[in-house]
Image 1 (tube, rainbow, N blue to C red):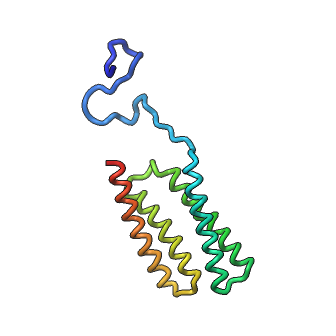
Image 2: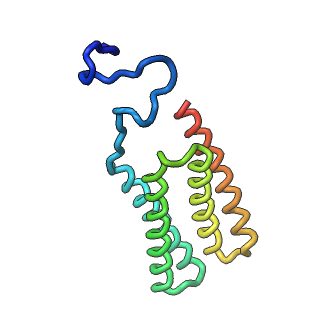
Image 3: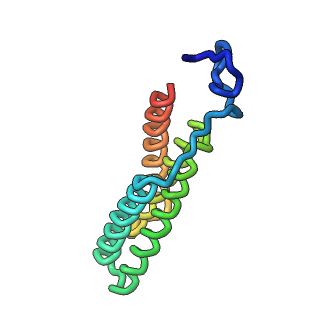
Length: 144
């Protein structure tokens, strides 16, 4: 039953067009496992790979583990913030944010192999643009 004669018993949308956001329907997003699991697993993998690359390229034992720990915590924290606030961003900004995070992480990993800053930045830019475009494609088609 979409329309009710009795006021107060059933609130229905009256007429064509989108449902206004200030109506009675509230979509509250609760904290799910994926809002923590995906960034934590990604940060863990990034941190372990950073430890591996740092040990392969002359860093000390403690330096390598500290570098991996910081990389894991920062990337997992930023990833969690992006996933938690994804509904507040428009599609383009969301795709650019995910692309920037991925590009920065890949450029950072490339910089651990003792290449030039320009090469590490170029790799990060290429990966970031590719991830941004792929994210935009997925987000756009998921929403439309």
